[in-house]
Image (cartoon, rainbow, N blue to C red; front, side, top):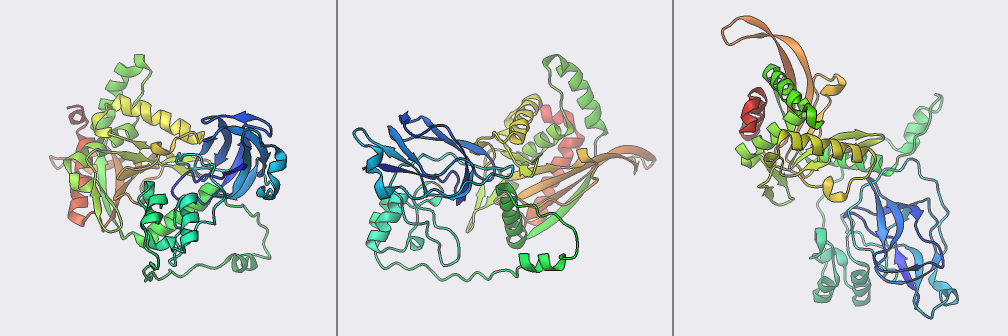
Length: 426
């Protein structure tokens, strides 16, 4: 029988995406590993590979179609000896194509699937989507099982065939005690409020929807507290100037942000209890210093992760950061390059911002907001008045993961590293 090619779930949170471009056409013969299409989610554009071999019998979803749900059939693959006449009712009508509005995207590479169309992804009573393979959903439907009551053993907790086959019938999910936070005014209310004013409606792309959802969740569920310090940069700026002269022949130029990354990475090693993330019912303490750095792009931002930052030289961190930032702006990052880490840096100092408070990116335990280095009057160690370049930083902390004293110790370690930059080379 003809085999349906389904819209893949390219990240653990993906529910729909944009079929940006078909790389094959009807009648093409494909083999396992051949590229079929480019799919956009909320952070990146990913190429979708074939798993099986066969002939593309019919394309069901035209390129440019937005909001294509995961596990919806997007094409039909024919085996040897089959023809388009065999497709029959298998092929669902294609949705109307919609031109994407500068779609942004985030994707986690997942194996392509050519299983038969499965029932829609179930939703738990709490409203959370239950992630399961199409085969697991079909088996669950046949056995009358409630997928929201089954614990998944696959990647990111996804329910797989074995989980369903081993599940006992009659399992019921626990009642949710979650109380929804009050919602703001709805679309109709806001439109009515401004009906006599001129305005332009800006549709939300995938990235902006994700940012809105994640930051709302972060502020509602993470108990933030904030620690602030002023850091004197004069020694760092002098040291940076000397190093950059030596690195000039290699085409490397260190920024203050490179030093902030290195200082934070070393501080996570000095204060290992701060190198932690919130995991729902436990805390995970990481051994390596995996530092995420916010990169602004059109319509949103990425937080690429510099893994094992404590082990890398300043020049290596600088080169890697420039590469990640460039590919982030082109939306060419692979999923493993912007996921993970325990801590993030958001630097608006280069835009003239003196200080600000950043929102924690879950499951991170903290985020450092970095302001501009500004000439300010200070009192020197000998009690005299002087002038120094001072940078204000704010550490936003998840109180579930890091207590006040621990956060203060961590921030002090960052400050010490930045004010004594030569020590970071030891």
